[in-house]
Image 1 (cartoon, one colour):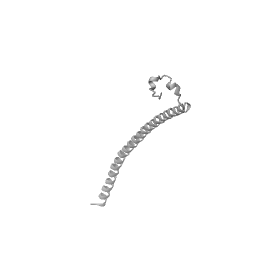
Image 2: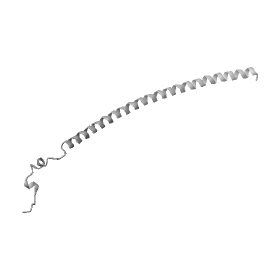
Image 3: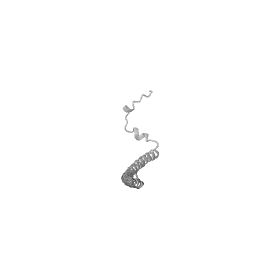
Length: 101
């Protein structure tokens, strides 16, 4: 084969290879771009979900701390129970006392 034909075949093959490589890389670039966009969207959705859960847990925790605090305050406000009030409605039969005579 002559060198002109060899050079033409190399040039044509290189050109065709470049076109095919460009096509393949562009489709992969679109796929990669689509994948990245999907990953970014999923990350945003996950972040919003985590933020909602964080707010819910904080609110629930604050409610529990408030309830514990109010119970704590109530128990210290009246630490000694009023035994007279607790037993005023009881009768002797309820007490079932066995006192020595």
